[in-house]
Length: 244
Image (cartoon, rainbow, N blue to C red):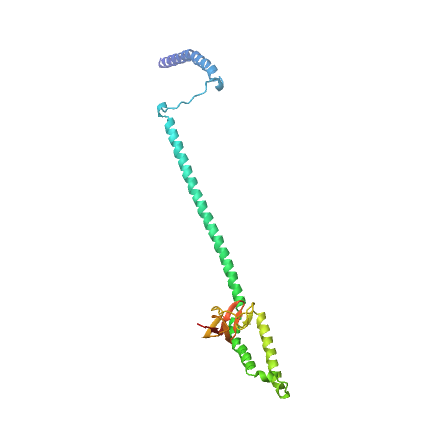
């Protein structure tokens, strides 16, 4: 009896499950049949999604504000352009000054080199001036009468004087090649008149009257002057006329 009751309950449960499956199956088929055509539609048929701004239209920039912003940007650009132009002018001025300084440096360096080359023998020439003066003193020590005399006993003196003059001329020509020249203020000027006293070239040792000369004329040369490449190496010592 107990087994029969269990079998009956099992059969009842089976029948109940079979009835539920038959009632629910059409609904699932119906639902899938209704949903399937819509799910298979192409995506292009759906309308495109549009995005709208969430901001309020009243918050948009006004034309006046746009003009003010544009004017501010223009002023900013103009100030920057003016600043750059000033920098360009400043750099150009510095460049011009640098070029001028460099050219001046070149000229000064060249001038210094020329002076060093032209006046390199200045000290050596100064030391020779006394020796050159001694030639003049030796020649002046011989009386003029002995030089003009035809007496054979004065022949040796004449030969000595001529030898001294030749040596002096050779020495002066050698020094002249290196820019050292001698000038005599007692020599007449180009127009034949006496030379005037020049403080840049002459040194007055005394002043004396001379009726046949004008004031300021050189009347006597005590020692001749020398120049080295145009520069006065030693001023000539002279006597100057002063009649007043």
